[in-house]
Image (cartoon, rainbow, N blue to C red):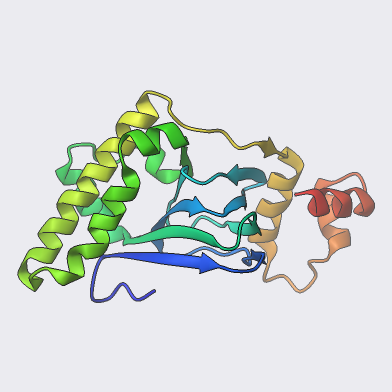
Length: 210
């Protein structure tokens, strides 16, 4: 999504088939709010989490993750918000909560909190900003993003967050090893197993599970 003309982009995505994204990262922050029709199995840093409709996940920039969508209805709908790091940092300083620790890791808000604060409504208001005067847009987006940051900060402090449903220290260790050595032509499943797992077979079974 092009963030050159606007520092915040809100997009509505619809999937009609089961789909899995590749493991990826991006230079901007990303927020995902599933609306209906699908649970999303996210994997990141050796952890798994099933994100249900109504819950919200925040991915900080440069964090590797992937998602698998399992359609439970005719289609799967979700809102995706992408925010440049420059605009995020500027706004969070203006909010008076500069450099909170939660912004450096994945945050998952439970459905009750996301609904109580009407985060879907906030995201939909953000999506309307391109239709107001150009001179107003950045200020309006800044106010709405600041509102979101303050909500997340309060909800994290009050522990209205969800932990991953499943975590594997072995997988986390293996993923970290791959990141450090992915340009090494000698990197193989066997060499990875030697560094992190009792056997290549155990490595294979663990990766299939996670």
